[in-house]
Length: 219
Ligand SMILES: *Cc1c(COP(=O)(O)O)cnc(C)c1O
Image (tube, rainbow, N blue to C red; front, side, top):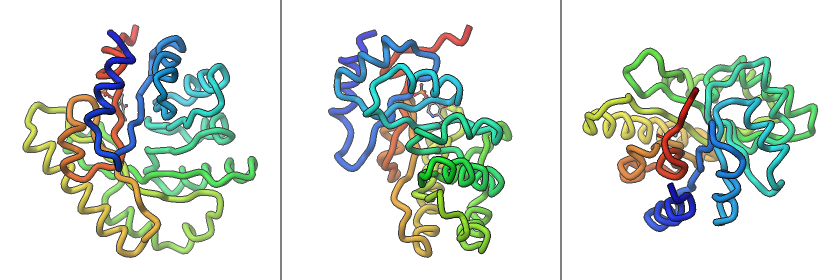
């Protein structure tokens, strides 16, 4: 695996308006530094503890994105430094992020995770729950978070027609939410296997791991 070649190749295929999150979960610091030395400054992790450890060891001009499912009791370990939390799927979680952000005198950017896949195992809110949340009074009281867009994960399938319709649904949901929340700008969708399709469907942020760093070994 040549991380620098992989990264340069992927970056050369991305339209200018699409942000690349290099998903470095399970990978050692040496791999992340290879990407860093190619110019990559946005890294995505799915475990808060692992991200905090890497944050401590890596240069400080990196933007750290939390792309995994967030447990409320662990928000405090990333509130000081996280740049974007992709997986917000409840008001309770948002409230905790707001509370921890306030302690550090920060405003933390978040994406609402919308459930677009059929699989029950995938997290996320319905489009109407997201809309209700954004219009609620409780939400307007949270001063230390900013919802900047939506995130979704398509069904794990080879059926690209299905993946495409799920991506289109997320784009549609974004457009509807943006009509009343003009601040929204980000659609986080697309991974190694489907990021080109996601971009065709309107993605503005892709989360690519194995195509950069190689396949993961979870043992
Ligand atoms: C692991 C992960 C990715 C990256 O997956 P690859 O297939 O390795 O590109 C993207 N998004 C989320 C939420 C992930 O957990």
